[in-house]
Amino acid sequence: MNGRACVYTRQSSMSQVRNHLEGQRRQYDLRERAQALGFQRVIVIDDDLGRSGTGSVERPGFGRLLAAVCSGKVGAVLALEASRLARNNRDWHHLIDLCAMAGTLVIDHDGIYDPSLLNDRLLLGLKGTMSEFEISLLRQRAMEAHKQKVRIPPDDLFQTECSRRSTANWSRLPTAMVAKDKYKNRIELLQGTLDMLILQTLQWGSQHGYGIVQVLRTRSGDVLQVETGSLYPALHRLERQGWVTSEWKQTESNQRAKYYRVTASGKKQLASDLSRWQQIVEAIGLIVGPEPKGGGA
Image (cartoon, one colour):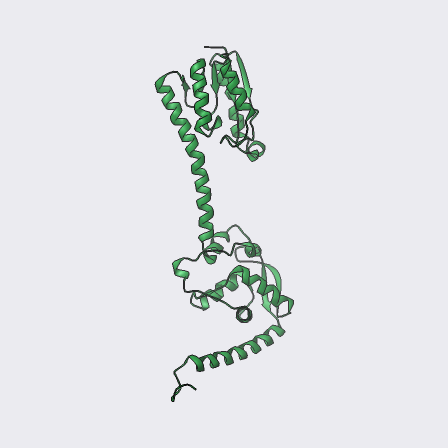
């Protein structure tokens, strides 16, 4: 066994390097393990801290490691796990081939391997395959989580987010969502109709934005759908016209939210809107009702 060992350390993101140092300290502790195994000279290669091991970026530290192994003066390469050396089979198997030719051992937290031995080489190959699969699996999970969030209907998303977001931030939630089957009968509201329904809802009592959405949904039998991209512009428009006013309060869940209430002029506007709406309803009823006797003109 040669009296020289290389300890290779790498972390995949700058956030880990700066904020999560536990793994980094474990990697540097491999120096003591190499010395305990009898290696007199231990070289720590940490040039690739903050660089990905997927092969998408250049890694001078990994290249330095390969050169050291090729020199034939390295007795062992130590790393916490295969993913700390490479996350793609090309780099991993290239290192294993060089270690086999140079008589260099590979040591991780599980054991000591001799790449020149068939069984050890098989196990190292499996570790490399699992490491490459791991990064693909993490990427797939992230993509599926993003797709799932886009699919969640607004109301379910509100309930999901309410535990960690204040009501004041709900206006920034995404509105381009695909409704589930149970929401297929919902109806989008026209702008003028939405203003009237908001004023009517606030006449029953002050509410924050999410409360207005819930009232409209419940009172309509889960038919009327109000998107955040329509609700908050309508509230701001009504506030500019002086028909509603707002103030910050604490919700029942002890979160800070903006509550809206209808003003005196807003109540007058609501009465006018309701009168016009009743006339429209009666006129539409005459058109879509039973055909008059004698036929149409």
